[in-house]
Image (cartoon, rainbow, N blue to C red):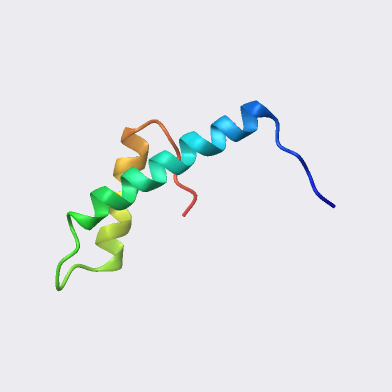
Length: 57
């Protein structure tokens, strides 16, 4: 079955995707040899929360 999204749902998805892209950009600044995935998770968590969202991971 196909569920059509409303304009409001599409806009929410667009905003979420923008934040994901911004988060990837922020994480790319921190990637270096020796950094752990836990450290990257913490950076992403803080970045997402600082932008008014709640991470799903």
